[in-house]
Amino acid sequence: MYQYNHKEFIVALEDQSLPDELFTHEGHLRAAWIYLCDNEPQQAAKKCCTAIKDYAESLGATDKFNLTISMALMEIVAVRLSRSNSLFGQGGDSNWRSFKQQNSDLFDNALAILFKYYDKEVLFSEKARHEFLPPKVAFDC
Image 1 (cartoon, rainbow, N blue to C red):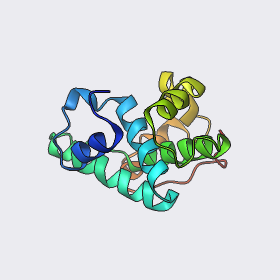
Image 2 (image 1 turned 120 degrees about the vertical axis):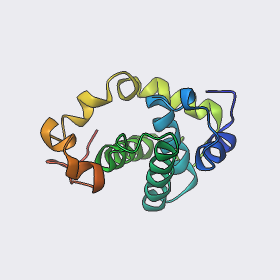
Image 3 (image 1 turned 90 degrees about the vertical axis):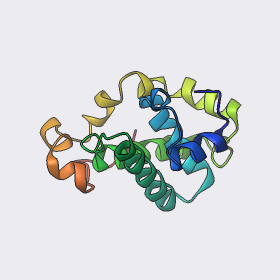
């Protein structure tokens, strides 16, 4: 994954040339983090979700994208970035590694975090795949 710097990673994601083995859960979080470091949160979410959806479709995985999960993870990453002001808006490799270390729970078990905000049935519903469903409580991660 680190064969690409952050700019190269986003370009490859957006032009759908990123090798599919590099777009793991960590790849999703890395994309969210990069977009949030480079854009206002609302614009970052739109860009990131569009890129992920288009990339998944390019791989023939049209049923994999879940808008609610992607948006919720964007919100969680944004909250955590805002709490570590020294990292916000600074998308360097060392800051990414620092973010990963400080947020290992997000990398190790993101579903456990998401289940604080969503019931499983809601999160994995057909509706959640196509539209953002608000959490049952505000994101305070």
